[in-house]
Image 1 (cartoon, rainbow, N blue to C red):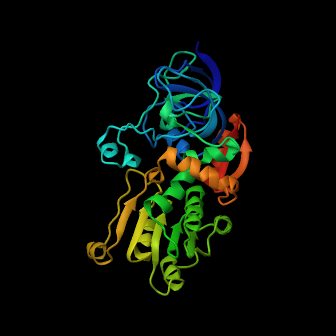
Image 2: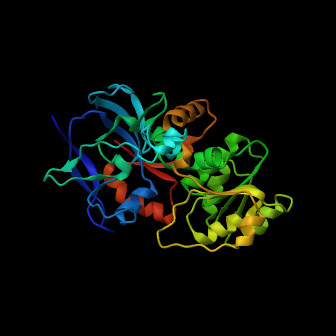
Image 3: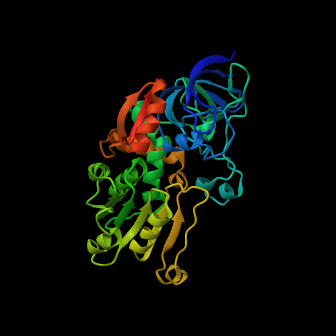
Length: 361
């Protein structure tokens, strides 16, 4: 039998979100129903509300979540009812050209639930990133469920479902930080601070944080930044060179998604250094770089998709590091809120008042 639960809906571009009754069907083949315990408020959800992803309204928002598997459909073997899981939006198919060449982190045909959740009037919902977790229960593909140690609280575990994984993965998976290297992170929100935490985990010797908000620079130091600079007051490229013996950083991570900041990353890297873009640009943005410098400086210009993660590999490992006291996931949680607090959480995010608001159900 289908169930009726409460969830947060974006009904039209730019309109405030509303709390509505959602109809969740029983899981079909390959699907699972998950009772959500906590879900972070991610900037991607705001992008959905603002029509920045697509126009397939109404959206069931929320995707950065953890909870308990309640029921599974036919053929599901990776999880059983009662399992504590983090939801992910990279349920790899195993058969696309990326998967076949041994790069499932780039899977081009990830799985989502086939059935649709609806409003009580029958209107079908578009779940954010195929998840829709600002909801008491949600329907997903079973491959979107990654089982982890239940000793971790859902309020921190769920953060690995998107932003924190994106940042840590940008440093470790995409950027390949190694011991003794220098790393510069441009933008010290949730994703940027996660990149800083990842660089510290990997043993970077210098971690330079760049932002225009002194509050965020203070947060960056808590996650492991060894040097900070407010780029309103100083040239970040010159500052990075000044603390790297005039060379520039081995790895520069752009966690904002702005062309001018990307140029600063490009200019601030050492010869044969790497730039990783993990911030999400808007579709109309363009960038122009000196072609000779692309050749002459060597190295690599990369984009990081979801931190180039494999959920079944990375989520359990990072939860273990958290439980060992080596990864401060709790430091990302600025506040816990109820479902009806999501709209205000968006405003706090836009003002830069929080790293993460986390909905607790």
